[in-house]
Length: 426
Image (cartoon, rainbow, N blue to C red):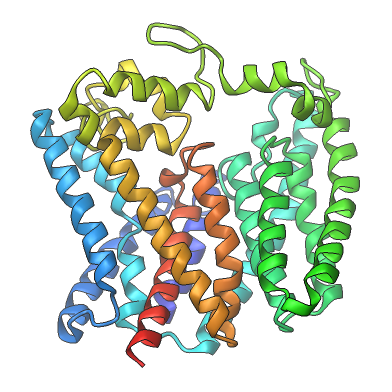
């Protein structure tokens, strides 16, 4: 099982990139999905033998209720099998990894191997992102900042992934498992890819994640001192991020400064709400992607509760027969954010259940962080902030279809949930 998890980490972080540059056979871009099948089979066999005793009842209730919602949505809309299969592929492929830690007890040295590998993969983003930025500048494609994504496929994903990693590194420093100098070096190095990819969410999620980690991880008698230290680190980060971001943004077709963008109410509002209504040819903003689905769902009580059916408002890479019937109408919204997809395809009830699942993982992480002084407690401390960041980013990008984030989220959520249940059972 340890070998499978190390392979999975590599599969979701570097395999798609290596296939895109022809360093690996093209079929290996589906490696993570290929591993989901054996993982599900292992969970079924091992879990049945162990009666899934380390899976809390609250998770069975949440997953069971969500399964009912998905079934009702498909039936109510007379949905064809193609969109259902496509929707299940994107939304459920990482779920077996949540149950693996409940049926296989990972030892501390095995988790350390995972974290070392993740650290190496984070550092790998620095030279690759730098090369991608150099390539953009060399060809004068200054408007194509999204091409700076490391090995993770999207620039926003790169920033979110590295932010979550820095939350884990900060937790390790606070628990004495990483020196201050090592953390500072990692912070500066990982800030480089986030500065040159021009992702606007970085100055929001990075301070959010680190402040949560520092404040929760600080001893009660050192909270003020820790807060000052966190502010100093973020000030250094800002001194690096802002001029680098502004330098590259000044060379684009629409130059602006990140500080002006965040403080200019009109510009920030127009970015969030582009006015992309039904029938409009505009790309949807983040606010549009929430408000318009809610307005559309409110037209019918059944649709409001269950949505249009899993996969029925999304495009599929498997072909037109797998693309949802409502993609032509609502695709501009489901392309933007996960929450728009959840609302349109699972209804308000499904979206609430998904957020509840995130809340359950968050509360378990908080409990484990406060009661475990070992490596898993450190992992839980960093995960508290990482869960806040990833949940917030459900409203920013289509996070649920991103392998690197979804597989890592559900696996480490499973580690934390199984540890919490083990503590409860004594």
